Structure formats: structure tokens, C-alpha cells
Image (cartoon, rainbow, N blue to C red; front, side, top):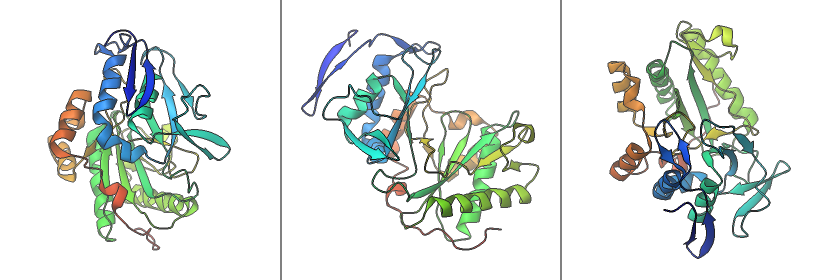
Length: 299
């Protein structure tokens, strides 16, 4: 690719600019490579973005420069970019490959979406537990907590899915696809987090105060809120290197814990693409698995 290029994607024309700009200096990873990554990961990523209001996290000068969040879909968007009015904000919807490439060209390195679709902003179709380690705890301790959560939900007859945050943590998803409100899912997630913190106080904390988090894993239940977003699976992260938020199997989570090696669950862009080519979309059940939110106290 040259510094700028006119492209047509499924009949939709757009201009890609500043393609030679380096977005990840420590890795020498350019804007052209960012766009290429999103082009190639699109078959796995697009189903998870579809119909969900997108919050753009833009890094016009790369990961070492200033960034900003953008909820309102830019007014200079092409006419073929779909939008939706949600909570008084006109969000972009990434419904197709052209829109994904357009967003990447805006230096939207990270794709952030809520737990609901645009048409049903009061109805989350999943619950998320964001496991965030307090130093010197790391992804290994997150794996330990994730496996405990999995066992808790298995006892309730529920399946869960895990993905890396692409940063330092792990995120556990409980697919729902049944009628539930944020009031219900947030209360449920908080009950789970507090029960786990009471059961394993040396390992887990459910309170977000920094003073309480050292050496422990925060089970962040607060993401279950209509005004909050979580990084989408298969999104790049704005770290020193182009890491990706990737689905992992429970066997891999267990292996990471046993080996005490967080690098086992770290995937940069090239490795992420090879992994999807080999395994397909390990997060596909999130889109189809139908489960009801438990109406019982979690212990």
C-alpha cells in the first residue's frame, strides 16, 4: 500500500489515508497493517459487532499519542455507514466490511461495544465479568478466578466463555439470549462477585477501590450497565505491541494456570489471524447459546 489509496469494498468507495504512519512504534506496526488485520479478521469479528452501537477509541498518532473516545458517529461518515439513535446518541453500527475498514482508517484501533443491541438498549444478551489483576498478580491469577467462576456456573447448568482482554486480564461471558434487564444482570453479577470475594478473600476482591486490589483479582461486575462498553472480541488493543482480545478455551486457561505463564494467553495480530484460521470463531456460541439468568442466590 502507498501512503493513501482509493479502494472499493463490495461497491462502497473510500479513501484510506496515511497508510505508512507507524501506529505501534515498538513493533513497527503501521496503519496499513492495522487495516489489513481488520480486513482479514472480519469474518470472525463482524458477527460480534453487528447491530451493536460502536464507541470508537481513536489514536490518530498511534498508541504513543493522544487518544479520544467518540460515541457520536462522525458527521463526515459516508452515506452507507449505518447508524442508530440510542440513549440520545447517534452511534455507528458496523454492519459490513466497508464500515469496519472505514472505522480502522479513522484510527479506531479498539472496537468497544455494549452488552446490548441497538434495537433493545434495555435488554443485555450476556453478562460479563471483567477480571483485572492488581500487581503483582497477573493473568495467571485471573485464570484461577475464571476457572472458579466456570465451576460456579456449571453447578447452575450454565455455560461460560472466556477471552483475553488483550491487555493484562481475562473476561468471562455468560450468554443469555433470554429476556433480562440490566437491573437484573448487574445485581446478579454483583452477587456473584461478592460471593466469590467472600469465598476466596486472599485471591478475589469485588470492591473497585485501588487500596484493596493489590495482589488480588478484581471481579468487575460494574460493566453490566447500559452506559458501559467492553472491548469486542477480536479487537486490537492500544498496547506497546498489537495484541488482540482473543477467545480461549477452558483447557488453555487451565494450562496457563498450571504453567504459571501469562504469555501462553497473549496473542499479537499475526498469531490471532493464524489462530482464527486454525480454530474458527471460538466465541460463536456467544451469539447463539440460549440461557436464562438464574433466579437463585449464588453461593
